[in-house]
Image 1 (cartoon, rainbow, N blue to C red):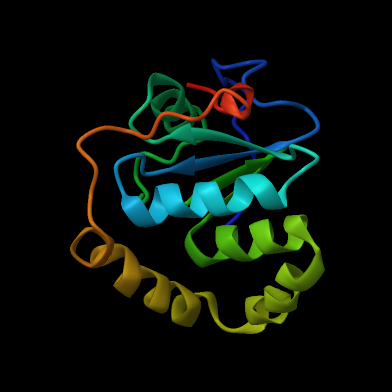
Image 2 (image 1 turned 60 degrees about the vertical axis):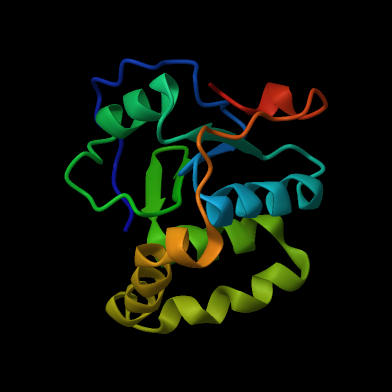
Length: 148
């Protein structure tokens, strides 16, 4: 999924012009693990992060018209494009480069098929990977990359 940005966004300046924002479930161990996986593999700091539970995350969900989407998902906001579910994961791999680009050809599979697999994991993520009582707190060295 990719959508054009509405003109009436109320969070100007939140999204860095030269980067992308990853919205994630801040209490999900799998999701926070994914963020912790991304940070050391992104030395240029392309990715910035906000939990879906945060005020910034909720504002971005509203601003980009994502309220009606099933957000058991990683969301990637890059410029004027929004990616969710498997499309977001594949785009993140492309932006990371290197060996992670090898997943790129999966984008040619029907999105319905890719998202089915994604949805199975998302629906069971708390049971399989656990859940935190509160959102993760970033360490000082990467705190500037978190928008909340």
